Image 1 (cartoon, rainbow, N blue to C red):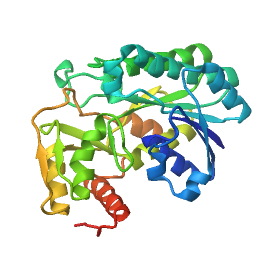
Image 2: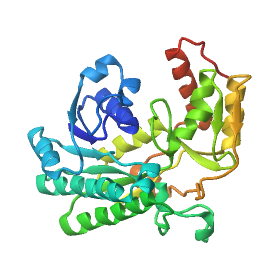
Image 3: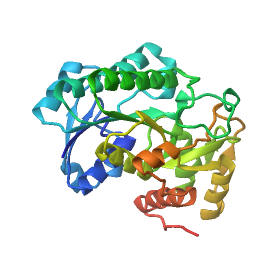
Length: 317
């Protein structure tokens, strides 16, 4: 099968590409900034040689359609977005990239008859725990976004439903929680760099939001779910909330210190401000996805990949 991944040289896109290559698919990475990105940290030279990288902008509908048509693309995985801090700082650009870009992916699928689009939504469509009458948010919980980024994702979910009802465009949006792992270079999850990556290399980490309880989604689980969604039969739901392992920041810090005695980690007070508790029954029932990576397994894997690359001895329980 021929896949086009927008944002395909980015963090999650690189892991999705690796998984698709392992299954024998052809992968085209369509990306605005294809150089100096996560793909060089994640993929082997052999895997890199098997990906076709095409520079492109998701806001350019004509170019995106031309590439999909010429390459006979059979699935679109749309992961190209302006992230949260950038979106809040530049709402005009956020709406253009995050909303117009997603609409373009859906429109190309409509025009070319591409049978499935998988795209990245976010748990930031939801609000504070106090906004809801239940502890664990069901898949269809109402949206109360607290950021421009979350509001864009909420609009995209509406657009995906509209394209399905009016045109029959089959898409699945995946609401990622905090995705972490080697190769994360941008976005809110970068505070995991301070908590995990820096201590892994013997560097001091200063961690914001040290009082939070967070859903930790290891990137390999995120990529596995994306590929599963791209190949599943049609689902009843247009978007699904994902979960990983619900743990406090302090618990993760304690585990890193146990792996690497003497780790210098400072936790600053604060939280991100929204709930991290999700009921993922719909995802489990309709897609059959269950997370496989515990916090300990994901953190340990991240630490040891980084240490191997740096020539340091691996660690473990």
